[in-house]
Length: 403
Image (cartoon, rainbow, N blue to C red; front, side, top):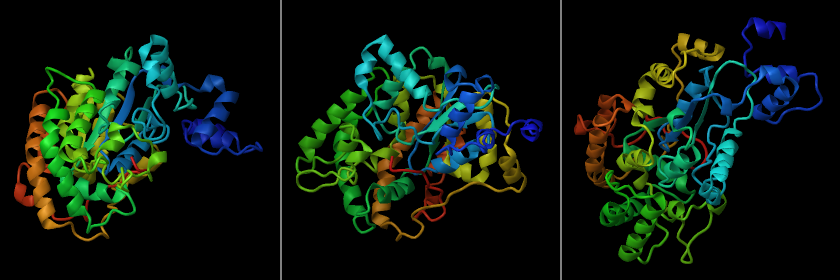
């Protein structure tokens, strides 16, 4: 312990060292922290007492695991598990009945903050988690604003955006083991056809007349049933709040809800971000980066995030070594071994996304987001459309789970 004090109490090691002589072996770091702090309450602090909270919103298949790995090296920002999924119904049904009372909302807030458990330090730290479906889920920001009603000024968000066409191809293979390159064109064409008919009347957000996530999904389902009555699996995973335990369920005709979840829809970023503004969150508390920015200089992005959240840029021992050795953290692409995507499908998707990408830039320019707009324009190929990629071999698309 003396050596650890001299080294400034390297937090990841303290509980494990303190418990080394016991007969109980902790199953994970959170349990190790709990056991240590039970015996050393004066040396620990809880997430609920820290003030600011940093929440990563997504997007899925944009390099969120690499982003979280960089943040892991920042000693002043601490995460529990990377993907808490508290607000998106991915792991469990969110108990909306508690939102109707102040005591219920406070209970949900405490439940959420307890996910971190105590940390073996008395210095200030920023609790952090990153669940890639928060951004996509149209109910999540509205639930968040109710749970955080007394803490809105302390909530900070982190988003990483990626070329939506490359993101779609990578995301497709995460939907199901049955998702193949050969089936990709058919599913994308079908989804785009429905979105062209239904998006404006259901998911487009007019900031002068915001609608709840429930209302958005209600309109989407009604339009889907009208224009594609033979396939009611489309978007049902999000609209119906299906959890991971329902992953292998299908419609009566055998259609997979996950393969119809909305791979294309996930890449329409503008209204996903606008949805958080409608829920009452401050755009100046939203940090937006891109997959390319992270790949080119992740340590620089981490330094910007530290300044954004108001903590010193301080790396742990491993982070210092990685930075000194100019070692970036990228998990790499999970579709590098897949066939190149169909060119006609790629062109169709670029045509579909272009107006939404242009609307996104307009939104970013007219609100005080923490963002490098030129980097976003570069990511979306709005500066030079001729530089668009046919494939996805070099991008970092990794994220965990199936969110």
